[in-house]
Length: 267
Image 1 (tube, rainbow, N blue to C red):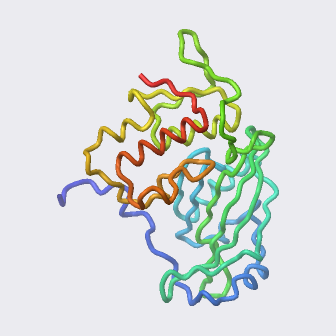
Image 2 (image 1 turned 90 degrees about the vertical axis):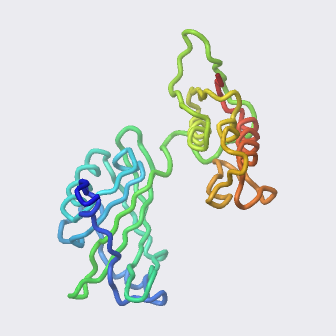
């Protein structure tokens, strides 16, 4: 085991910032007294171990970047490429995060838009820590894609038939094909339907949810019920057990797909 390659993981930052903060710290007052020009950040505004976690907003994927130099360069490049603009901090919603004594940061939410195609609206959080001089540095940036501009809301879909249905046949054309009708596949399909995109979900199982029924009979999720929810409403209500079994998952996913008329081709 000692001779196995270690890779990059041991070199990545893994420490939470040390700060003399409490949950009663005046996060709003601190945030209002700061100037954080998110559209034109400088390297000096980051802590050496700064991180940036992007969820599709600026990188187009789920990506985490490490170190001040890396984050600064990537932030500058991706903001330019995506034509990020309209950064608006919300200091009134700032809060002190203190997971343990001697560890903490001030978290300030913000919003922004991107003008490059596809134009989007996004949100994020900037987490700030004090340095030895009493000034505040950026320890963590988080950015999240919320919506596409000039397109339907991806978080809203009324039950009932899709506007257009495209059964699988030779020569059929779709804008998107989703492989697998599990939790991820169904979630993507629902949001594509909300956007009005032409799509098809394909799965080798004969019915939605049947992949779960192939598991052993006593199987139960180790995560709570809410972790298995699908978009738009509560797929699994309080009628379902907190730790669901295979039959619960299959039944819930089947009911959801039927409710929203998800376009599936099951082989």
